[in-house]
Length: 448
Image (tube, rainbow, N blue to C red; front, side):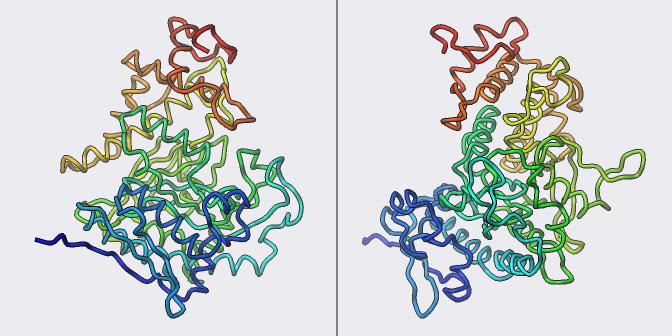
């Protein structure tokens, strides 16, 4: 009996000119990137990001089978899924076409066009705003190359750094590497499935861990006016959330996938700020009646009044906040204390893992109960208040090791000075009985 080969083939929506506005322009990529990846044409760029998404989704394809060509004024994608991945590949194709259509990615372009007609677009054009990115440049930048079919959660953030555009890689940055380490520490093995990111401002601009606040030209009002104004048809953010949070793989679940809204009060709080303004009628209120978006706050929201499903959410720190603003302070019950940061971030990762566990077991997911369980693990208390006090000594060691990695950073290599295992060894040697990470960053004999 002859073997049957399945080929997935589909046209990207709209004209080639439309698609070329969505993907990074080859001429604007770093020369080293273009050479290394062979990105000479738009077809090359589309193939590159498609291959990245398939890999992030864990969908195997036959080596060399991915093709992107221009046919009758439109781009066409084809690839051969490896055995056992046929159904996932079809779901991938459906999601790929939907994301790139005018009702989703097209709304980001529409919002950028509207913004460009005002002084709000790149008001510092031609002038540097940090030490590393050169003259300020803004470019529409969509969430390409991420998992789109098998992802387990969506993370809401502020905006992509310009380096993501120039290197044709939304995911190769310290923020995502740190996030992968946190996910690994709570027992998640398929970390790439937690790399699905949506920015409330889909514009690449100078970033790279510099101080955003003197240079913050992406306030909440910019999102509200150009990416979340339904009356003007500029509703990119919620259209994308609705699509990304309920992919075909989640359709049998009564809830959408979980949404992690990232932004520390001390670093990049704009995504929670937008979430607060958009869903103020559905959020808890403080004693003055003001809607809250406190770190580790959880609940359920309905993305649109007519959305069929509720979305479980958690407010979390920005994924790199601990490394940028974390310190050794005398009060471990409040940020910027580094141990408090690490414990909060581990709670967020654990909360997502508990959602995946509930889904795999066919059990209902209760956001508040999952938070209490996660906080009990990392704080020794169900509310996450106070100083971290894990019941398990190994978890205390994990907090120390992560804090050492964040405190001891090499600005030249743009990476922690120590691997996680090296940081664990350092904590055991110098952390004392409490496994405090606040003992400096110098070599410790053989543990260095």
